[in-house]
Image (cartoon, rainbow over all chains, first blue to last red; front, side, top):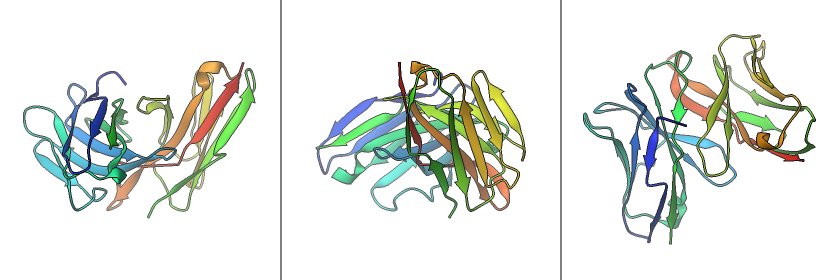
Length: 116
Length: 115
């Protein structure tokens, strides 16, 4: 998983607080994908971003969740007014081509979000 | 929508045994990816398959892209304790007929290897 950096690795929040998860893609990668993994399940796609643009957010809940990938700095996944059901591992992946067939995605080690 | 079904859900084997797991879909995939996830870490790409019928090896791992494009299997030969983990198949969802990087994952196969 070298290259895609996520922080924090663990995040604890109380219900109603905000959670901000950061992802720095591999060097040279301009495409970022966020996934959510519940215990004993596979990863579920949330959102796909390029620099300053949201390309596909079809997997992201319509309320309380937002994502950005600014021109400078990491991609941020923001969850407002967290609830217990938001507890999960959130993974970021990056690539430098639009088609996975040319450049498989590389994943970070995730942020484990726990809601008290 | 596109879904991937993996089997078996879990496997308990002795060190040295061979392992086989598969992944099926009701939809066609143009690329199949196999990942391994260790506890507390992100998925690591093991093998990528791009053509129907393709058979690809990576050390003790061998994977095949099914002819129908609706299935794939992963074999691990002569298993060792560090093979323990969760194995996921994944494929890019189609958008307007063009595959791109939004992946659909199977639910995973949990592998336990007894020394």
